[in-house]
Length: 442
Image 1 (cartoon, rainbow, N blue to C red):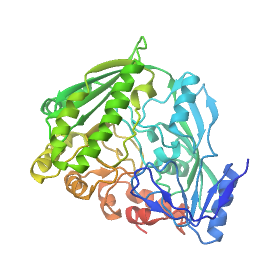
Image 2 (image 1 turned 90 degrees about the horizontal axis):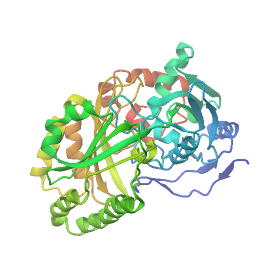
Image 3 (image 1 turned 180 degrees about the vertical axis):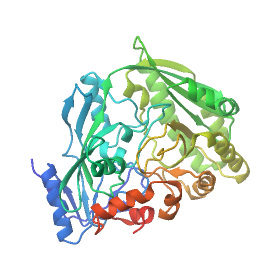
Image 4 (image 1 turned 45 degrees about the vertical axis):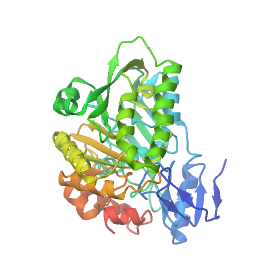
């Protein structure tokens, strides 16, 4: 199998439909050597380079008018090391395929986000995360990385290397595509385990009053608040001795497809056509999902299908600031006249040691706001962002925000470490695009 190159100048669009780009050419390398050659050729031709996964970022982090690298031929598991409990995968492997392959081997990641459509490199490079009291983002589970840098050389790094390699490892786990193109990732894995999920509606006031307890008592706690109501749907995931009691096929279809995707899609259409109906729809929606408990292997509990397309903004605030931030968000919505039909999602993560992780050096809570694809989201997101940034919030690198390098230098203590490493690895800015120019400076 060898790489394919096309110079069709076709338009590339992201999943949320809010970003488009026209690359000069697209390359689909079938090996690391071919990818390195594509990078060298782009440099010779004076073209910038970006790798793109499944386009699940809502920012233009993957957009380029130069060479677009598609990694779909770089997929699959390279190696399983049961002595060290690690698995090395090619960068273009979708999380969905990784989860299935690991389950077949009796293995699992410790934690994951709530969708698994993204490639492993796209998900980790932007800091994709789930929720966890002790277990952190997908990138925090990385033990080693391989990447092609701007001069076409292949670098590997891990936490065990030289001081230089350790600095690269700290930065490249969430590298934003700025340091090189990731070609393989080594993850820590563990024997597959069971999680019991308990989902139940709970009044927002109670969730906010008891938030610290709910966080402390559960390995993975998250909730969704329905704007214009005092209602939430909470989800607690904890390890279980079993037995495995998955959601029945009928119940799964009713809850996860019919209500969470089908009825929800119709509610979004009605809400767009007649915004005045949104508070009523929200009250009905918040009551539609009933309490349920089920036990299954991790990826079947952590992840769920997302068929309603949307645009999203998410900020990490210090965990101790989450209830105050949410109260301010609710007060803003109550007085704004905005009509919001999409729930607000709240999750947590422990502090980690990754240079540009949204949880770098601090225990964090994530607050995510959404609007259905095509709806005018700017007014809502701008008002929400004002609240998040007042609490020194850090935006998810792959979700809508308006922050720049000056702001990030203030909220990331190690921001200068990252930009210095980038100066060394990519002095000519081969991997630059408009988004990186804004968030990292030129």
